[in-house]
Image (cartoon, rainbow, N blue to C red; front, top):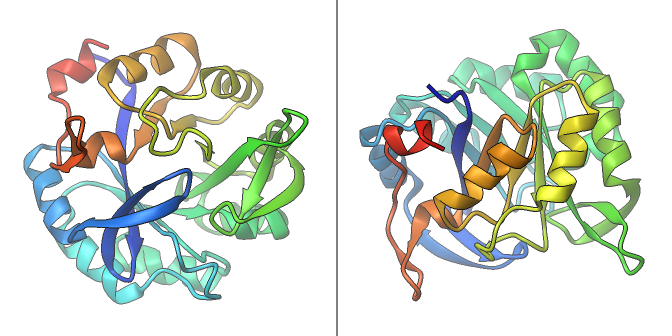
Amino acid sequence: MSSFRIIPTLLLKKGGLVKGQSFANHKYVGDPINAVRIFNAKEVDELFFFDIESTLNGEHIDLDVVSKLANECYMPFAVGGGINSIDLISRLIELGVEKVVINSYAISEPDFIKEAAETFGSQAIVVCIDYKSDKNGLKKVFLNSSTKETDYDALKFAKLCSEMGAGELVLNSIEKDGMQNGFDIDFIKKVSDLVSVPVIGGCGAGNLSHFKSLKLSTNASAGTGGSFFVFHGPLNAVLISYPKKSEINNL
């Protein structure tokens, strides 16, 4: 049986489920609670929820929304969006969250990764790295929903996060987001070969063969995406889906 995981990522905006391309032009695609119920029925192993506006607005993911998600989710789930304090992580875990995903705050305060990992255990702390190529072709880390470039080289930052105690790393290619043309295999391979913690490839999945390529060509432990799970057909009609267990095991 395959240990490779396929994880849907659901993006939240004002309590609704949205999806876009290259971290922009997000459109409403439904109620996240309804999506969770469908994923329950399909026996999904794990879910990610990212609030895409929290950090931009100086806020954090809505705890009432998280509570409602926790009441519906049959599977372990992780949440991200404005995670910037030990108290907030504690409150989220009390609500039933298994993992928290730190993004922008990991960039401005890398020591927070270590503090959080020492407090809750590395298994509860995920760092999400959003990146794209700069004008020189170098992979650079971006924050605030891809609106601000940092000085961090993405590969070096991934190593730093691993050394600080992150239990998992999610690698989100901004250029691949929503394109459904495959993962950024080369970069994911570089990171998964470099660090000692599980790496999750994100952005670009359009079919199962993309997940197969990720599994066979890198040391990533999982792949995640959004469009693959919420859109269907050439016109991107909204249809929540998830592969059968047999399909995943045969990757």
